Length: 67
Image (cartoon, rainbow, N blue to C red; front, top):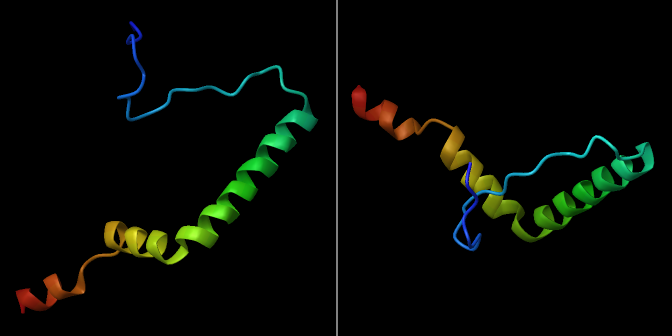
């Protein structure tokens, strides 16, 4: 796959987990991700919950319209 000249417009980031990390390095990355999840939860908790519910919970009003 040819890589684009600029990555600014890419919507996804393709990355892999190196196979040469030590267990300590892997743990450090997991701890970083856990902390990042905490920060995001503190800042966007309710908005994130609402977005998840909108995308994953069926709309009950649509069921009411069928009957």
